[in-house]
Image 1 (cartoon, rainbow, N blue to C red):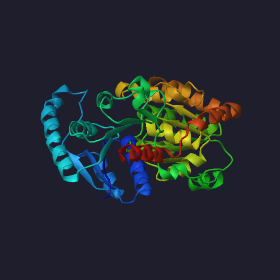
Image 2 (image 1 turned 60 degrees about the horizontal axis):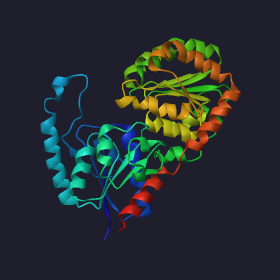
Image 3 (image 1 turned 60 degrees about the vertical axis):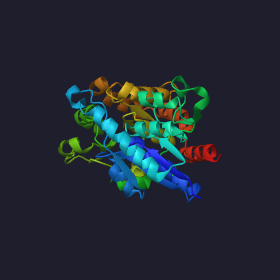
Image 4 (image 1 turned 90 degrees about the horizontal axis):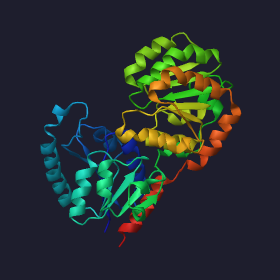
Length: 364
C-alpha cells in the first residue's frame, strides 16, 4: 500500500521551491508515494504547484497584517474556517505524514495533524525560526534544518541538519563562462556583476545600480541586472544605448546567470543564500530589512561570520554598494578566499536528505 504525504505551506518561492525539490526526491525514492500539497488560496503556490504536476488544496487563510491592523479583523474567522477545511482534507486524504515548509498555511495543517496523532515534520529554511514553527516544533517528530544553529530555537534532539533544497538545474554542472556570457550578449573576458533582488526586485538595490551604472561600466564591469517587474521599464531607460549590460524583469535561466557572474549582489532569502553557496560565488548581501524577525540578516550573517560573503545594510546600499562592487571586482585574491569559504556550505542533495530522513521516520 502506497504511503501518502501532505506538504503544507507556501506564500513565497523560498517555501515553494524547496517543497517541490523534496517532493521530487520522495517520488524518485518511491514512485508509488502519493503527495498532496496544501497552500493558501490566492498565493503563488496555487499556480506553481499544479504547473509542477502535483495536486493542491487551497485554504481560506491569511497572515497577520503588520502595516494595517484593521485588515486583521477577519483573521479569527479565516483561521477557524481553515481548520474546518484541513479537517476535511485529512479525513479524505488520510496522510501517513505531514511536512510543513513554512508560510501561514502550514500552521493549521500541522496543528490538526498533531491533534490526530499523524507524524509531523518541519523544514526550517531560515537562520531565525518563525514563531509558528517554534510552537509547532514542540510536537513534531523532526525538524529538518536548512542551516546550522537552529537548536537555538528547537529541541536539539529533534533537529536534523539537511541543508536547503535548491532547484535541480542549480545542482548540475554550470554552463561554461563563454556560453553563459554569450547568452547575455556580454564579453567573456570582462568581470561581470549579477544583480538579483527576488521576483519583485529590491528597490534599494535597483536604485543603487541605476545611479551607479555608469561608474560600474567605466570600471570595466559588465552587469546582468534582474530588476523585478516594478523597476523593469525604468531600468530599460537607464540601460538604453549602453554596452556591457543586460537587464530584464526576470531571468528564466538562472544557471546561465550564475555561470556568467564574477560577483553577485542579492537579497538574503534562505533559497538565494543556498543557491549562491551551491554555485560557490562571492556575494554581497543586502538583507530585506522588513523580513519577519529580520531573518534575512541572520541568513547573511551565517556566511559573513565565515568570511564567505559581505553584508551591506539596506539603508546603506545607496552610498556603499557600487564602491564595494568595484573594489571586490578588482581584488581577485579576496574573491578566491570568499569562494573557498562558501563552497563547503553548498549542499547539492538537501532534498534527498530530507526525503531519506522523513521516510525512515514513518516506516514504522
